[in-house]
Length: 384
Ligand code: NDP
Ligand code: MG
Image (cartoon, rainbow, N blue to C red):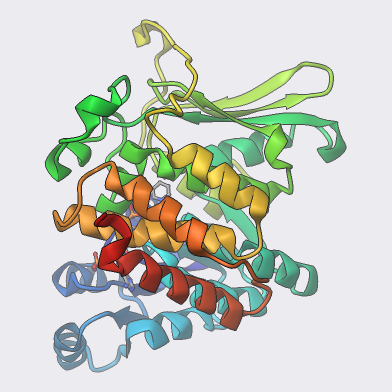
């Protein structure tokens, strides 16, 4: 029996993970879970999964949970997430909060030498240098949950690391694939929130429509697999059936395919190196696929990928700045304070204004993150 801690159990990845666990109750026990604003759903999850520890984002939720469950250890806010990262009883911790708030808990889990099922890509983007250094010291392991990185992780098993020629990350192209700059100027939040293939949280759905999600994934791949940016390619594949691929020196390409459902990579991260039956899902039926198509990213329209390559190549604190500026810009877009294309403008101007520094300690990561949030939040930045 494996004890699972889920950071962000009330989110899209979190609820998918609970579905995986629901079908494997004899193998997995939920030891801890966290929600932020949605304490009602967290209450339902506590009732069903009976964890020992929970953390919640609001005072209101904290009081209600504490009153109702006197035997439960209840924590609150960022400190609460950090506490969940420190639990000795955890075997696997799934980091599925949205945004850079996941960093501290992940660092705690590394110190405890846990298996980290990493969905929270923002952590690897903002704090990748620090995390990679820590992984040299502590025997923690990171198994990616992001579908592309899970695919790359699996494909890499097909050869030796020094035999890798390049990594090909596939991208659905998002809701606005094929649109011109002119057409994108006036698109609404509601339009951006409609993803063709994946049902996900709001932030990542907007990131998919700007292709900043793919940008974050390029940096995530560099940090997870130690591959140069010149050896990472992004390929638009609208059907999301091939989740990513690795080309080896002999020109062989190994890809991972499957139904586009996050329960596959979540379960893989839980059971690796084993592959066990996934009773939540049906087989991919190739006969029902009319075609698989591939295309270039339209970098003139969707600047999210190129900006990420630039941030990644500069390195040090720049990826953290790209990430934080994007988080601020996405919030503003969701709150209807800015237009769609201004998301790129905010990221670009924040990056231009940044003086890079190392991010080898948590303090340095927080410094870059805070600086970028403040800079990206300045009104003047996009009002000229
Ligand atoms: P959701 O928005 O659906 O869920 C986010 C979770 O984090 C919720 O449990 C939410 O709590 C919690 N949360 C939000 N803000 C905070 C905060 N400030 N402090 C603590 N907890 C917080 O996101 P997703 O599940 O879609 O994504 C989660 C992560 O996984 C992201 O990093 C995303 O990039 C990554 N990912 C997601 C994929 C997907 O298919 N959804 C695919 C690949 C990666 P509450 O709802 O209670 O407020
Ligand atoms: Mg992904």
